[in-house]
Length: 279
Image: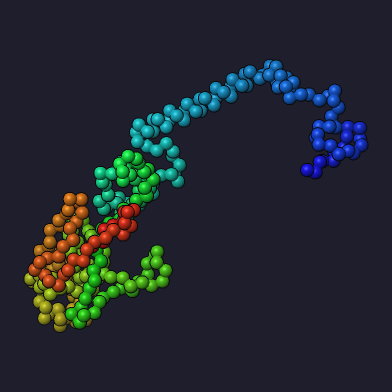
């Protein structure tokens, strides 16, 4: 180790490891002597008492405030950055199971929500208190095949996917709709298409004239289906009732009297971390 070179008390330069070497021995004061001199100071005891008293008061005050906020169910912080984000009330049905112990919401919109769940582990003998869980409204995706045997897809850009993507027709399941009703509504609204059975029900319910719709100018048949009269006719036609299973999830089935519709199944977008069910 390089030792510092400091001037001595007598004005000469010397190599020394003691930074206080320039202080005469008779003027040096030991650490013990310094502490004793401080303790003998007339203001030492009042200052020490004041510091201990105020620190205990602050600590007791923080504990009391935190306990009071816990009683009314409020967080123990008022920092804006710690408050859950919310731009609307989530319209979906939050997921709960026999393993759910508690739920804390981090952010919420009308269509999605981010929570932290406390859950029992698989063995039931412990807890997991940091289970990030995504809530999202259930939706439908429809593989549309035309009478010519062609698949209909959208080319679009998604926020979380770079570049253009091909996407099937789809959308959210609104309210208490059966997944099948959401599927054919999306096909009608976005494409102006439907199965022969669906179109027949629309014509009967809305008293629409197919020949008039074909000849109407400048509208095409698909445009007429998507028009206000087509939507009105769709709203009047009979609908399938929404059925749920033992987990209160919608049953994805197709009507037996319409062979052009086939239910392919359902999956959850984020799997074990939640997400919406896609039918």
